[in-house]
Length: 289
Image 1 (cartoon, rainbow, N blue to C red):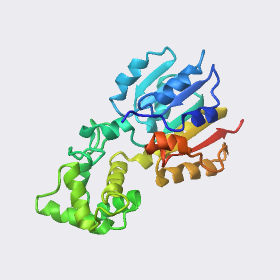
Image 2 (cartoon, one colour):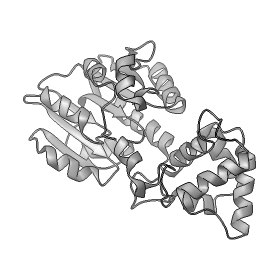
Image 3 (cartoon, rainbow, N blue to C red):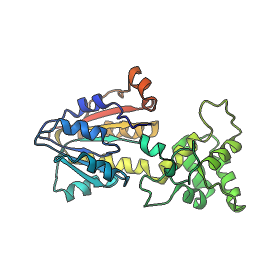
């Protein structure tokens, strides 16, 4: 599936882009939001980040003089801006989660639609893979991952079964094998509304990439670098992310919240792009100092 930027017009509206402003696209992805921001700049600048090394070539393909791309996780946003000699910015955009390209790339192991190694790393050259986590975490740690990050009710049962398979030396090594294993443990059949392994895969991906910790760090860095009247816009795709964004915006006294309720895609967008259905967008503005 071709990647489609979610809530693009709304994100641009809330960023309130100035032609001479400095902006950060913290999650470059396929570059859809970046291209739209660049079209609105004249003497301004866009600094884009992405943890996925495959985004490097996609950024090079844009070849826009106002674009600076840095291969980095957005939790390092402050360090990136320091290296670029940029103390303050006019806006920051976060488009969270897995892109369609990552999800559809069989070798990345994000999906169980096709057999692949259990990887799930945004940066496949750093950190532990999903298989490493399954093979080394304690039963308690696994149960906590599945429950806290996937809200999986059978978390303890699944964790116990994984440890038992580990002891027997038969832990599933591919996405399909592991998905079938989870389905067998939970005894949920094809009649279930979502595949029995969906929540477990989400939880593993979040744990492997420390997505919630990175989000907290990234939000703090972004808010700290906004100049007065600068905007921060965040598009999230599950309740755990949205809760962090909502609470951060509400509790940070430096911000005025612009979206009392999250902005969600309309029926036309969700019909054209079903993956947009779970998207929620929130925006805030830095108070004038």
